[in-house]
Amino acid sequence: MRALVYRGHKRVEIENVPDAQVPAPDGALVRTTNFAICGSDLHGYHGPVNEERIGNTMGHEAIGEVVEVGPEVRRIRPGDHVAVSAVVGCGRCEQCQSLITARCANSETRVLNLGQAEAIAVPAADSSLLQIPDGVTDEQAVLLTDILPTGYKGVRGADIQPGGTVAVVGAGPVGQMALETSFLFGPSKVFAIDQVPYRLEEAERLGAIPIDASQVDPVETVLDQTGGKGCQHVIEAAGPQATVRIAFGVLAHGGTLSQVGATTDPEMTINLMALFSKDLTYRVGLVSPQYAWPELVPLLQEGKIHPERIFTHHLPMSDGPRGYEMFDNREDGVIKVMLDPTR
Ligand code: NAD
Ligand code: ZN
Image (cartoon, rainbow, N blue to C red; front, top):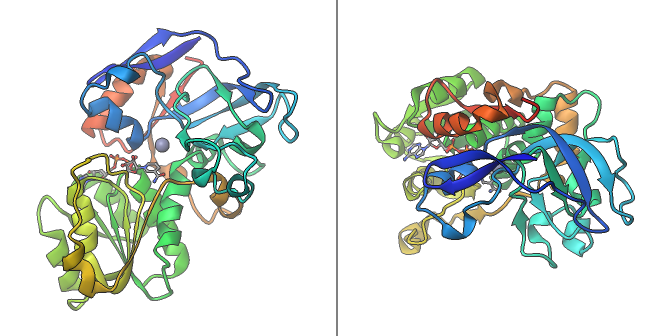
């Protein structure tokens, strides 16, 4: 089968790899019909060469059709049209049973890094797959595998109160999901901080106040516009040290910072002493997509959110390497790239 394979610094190639098989008695084989590229894929793509990962399939945001299931699978059937959770647990422990797969007690919690291929061997199928319900489009279902739940986790973690002030740091795909769902909780103001003008324009269309960190000091600007107080609810949706600093900087005393951006820099530091007087709450962690599905599916079905607006590019899988390059360089107004494995 064909897959997008990691080959080194800024090198992803389309290659033939061994066919995916049903992985275990509780697993399923899914033939993919669409998948997307995530900001998380970019960490490996543009980071230093990771010898251990060379030859690995990329990606974790796929939908498709179930071809075969193992003998222990109960809920999922061949022929089901499914979204594959980016985060997969054992499916049996207390945490997985509570849908918080990111805290699985039995497996090193794993992001399912197999998604950009013609087929995927999905472990713990009953826990990892969502049967795509009526009223949810394929584009929306791809977003349910990871980044819509991730942005929503950021928002839920920030405990937004009606009338509260919100800042979302990073207006990439995850930031866009956080911005859109933050409005469900009745904030008085939502600031969007980024440095890519067209992403800020997209945030402004949602009703957010754009702040271009390449033009102004974002912390000073937010303080100016909040009477010197800062925001009570801050969502960090980028990951680098610079954006984490901005996120703490714009946070009001007594506020809550919810970080979903993945910090990959091992030298990252936080000056807790300087933050002591803020009396703040800080949450950070990996998403459990399953946990958010029961809340997000009805919002999509009722047309309360339209996250599919972020798909700016649809490309055949054979153009996957170009999709990576474009997404990484933020060329051509790109926010989110969808790939079609049949082409
Ligand atoms: P992305 O790289 O497209 O988005 C990041 C955005 O932050 C970009 O628009 C960029 O311009 C902006 N940015 C970067 N540095 C900045 C700076 N100094 N000042 C202002 N803006 C800056 O990626 P994405 O797909 O939106 O993903 C965002 C992050 O979320 C990534 O770190 C990804 O790994 C992470 N993620 C986490 C989870 C989770 O489970 N917590 C799930 C999915 C993705
Ligand atoms: Zn992802």
